[in-house]
Amino acid sequence: MGEDTNQKIYKTRDIVQYYGQLRQLQPAEQTVLNFFQKQLSSMTMLDIGVGGGRTTQHFAPMVKKYIGIDYSREMIAACQNRFNLTTKTISFDVCDARDLSQFEDNSFDLILFSFNGIDYISHDQRLQVFQEIYRVGKSGGYFFFSSHNLQGIEREFYWRNQLSFNPFTTYVNGIMFAFLRFFNRSINYTQLKASNFAILRDESHNFRLKTYYIRPTEQIKQLDSNFREIKVYSWKTGQEIPSKNDLITNSDMWLYYLCLIDKNFEETNQEIGL
Ligand SMILES: C[S@@+](CC[C@H](N)C(=O)[O-])C[C@H]1O[C@@H](n2cnc3c(N)ncnc32)[C@H](O)[C@@H]1O
Image (cartoon, rainbow, N blue to C red; front, side, top):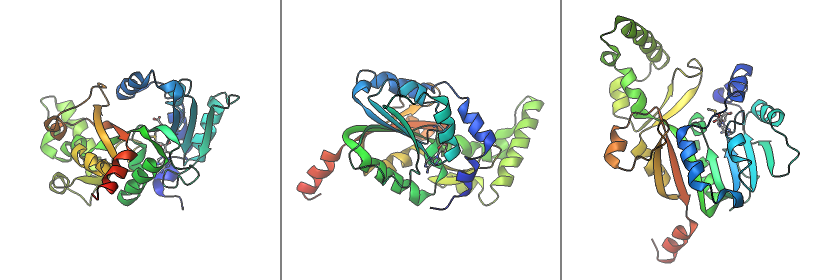
């Protein structure tokens, strides 16, 4: 698989350094770590898009076996330098989520793709990655990931939303608005409002990355064919967002999704001809 623009950016020195100095879990990740606390010691975990190892330091010591993968060789080198790898229970590998063929079916109890790592591939590849994650996950295991929320960015595309009583705030908003519109010239506010997902350049890493944004209800639909009991969490508060109405109006920049891998469900459906 050839390197795409996003992959090249995740190899650059400033970005590798940035992820290498991150330490804290995001509130939604802490919620889920607490949720699994008692089961972690018996879990085999795959951490996809591990970056500089921010999540490794929290999860790896708790689980039975931990594998961190990333398609950026430089990120994996940073993890190998950062952690003591004398223990056999922690390992890192260069691997693209779009090709998990090195892992057998039903290998992992917990699969993490944190901090929106899944948002840097195309729509079709994203659907394939969900399939692959389902394949390598064990039935009864979990997939936990975050993704950018289209409802969080669409308001930034509308000039009126940039106005404030404070002239300085209006000035700063106006500059960000101009950059956002410049880097996303092919799409306007009305088109975004009518879309369920979009690939945009946002301000993170200075508009260099192409980032997938999706409405939370659409994200749930994408997951529905493979996963059950999908729970959505605010990345900021770590609280679950249980109602559909709250999801439709939610404007967090990104949200976390916890999904149960239930392969018996699929088999039962096949048996009864659904
Ligand atoms: C936003 S960073 C997050 C890093 C780390 N998980 C964290 O939370 O600090 C996204 C990471 O996902 C990796 N990534 C993106 N697409 C990937 C893919 N298709 N396969 C493997 N890694 C990928 C990038 O190289 C980058 O390290």
